Amino acid sequence: MKEILAVSATGLGLIPLIYDVESSCFPGNPWSLESLRNSIVRDGAVCLAAFMDGDVVGYALASCTALLKVAVLPGHREQGIGQSLVRAVTETLGRAGCHEVSLECRASNHAGINMYGSLGFEETGRKKDYYPDTKEDAVLMRLALGG
Ligand SMILES: CC(C)(COP(=O)(O)OP(=O)(O)OC[C@H]1O[C@@H](n2cnc3c(N)ncnc32)[C@H](O)[C@@H]1OP(=O)(O)O)[C@@H](O)C(=O)NCCC(=O)NCCS
Image (cartoon, protein in one colour):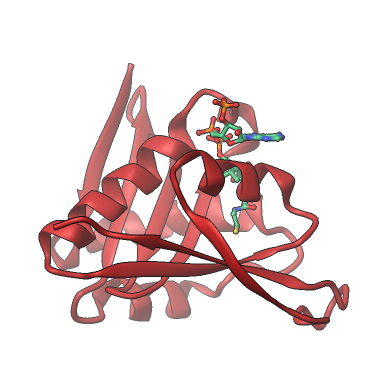
């Protein structure tokens, strides 16, 4: 059974579990526990975790203007969890009065780009050689949040 749960300042106990997902999904360059905590407690931040059988299997983190992170554990991908998380985050931002959300994604990340496209995000440009480790471009995408 799949369940989406909000993580907020009242759910700080989940941050280490979210960090485990972050480390598994971005093995070369995960955000630190401290960076995650700082972003999650920031005013206006939205962080949602996806639970399966009581375990955190994915999470998404956004500010009012930017989708900062989406990650689903490898063994749980391609089951609609990423889509559910992003949809829930953008709905929450829309209800909070945010007008649009943007993001950056590695040009080689076809799963990410396809997922965002399937949710209505549109490419707005590229940043050339943006990522220092691989020198690849960042694809910039944006979604208008309807009222
Ligand atoms: C990107 C990521 C979050 C997708 O999560 P997911 O739960 O597997 O995605 P979903 O099952 O919701 O798939 C949604 C859509 O994404 C696309 N997609 C997902 N996995 C894909 C893959 N391996 N190849 C191509 N497209 C893919 C499809 O369009 C899919 O829609 P469809 O099933 O109707 O075809 C996941 O692959 C991940 O955690 N990757 C590592 C971290 C990362 O890259 N995060 C994004 C940084 S910008």
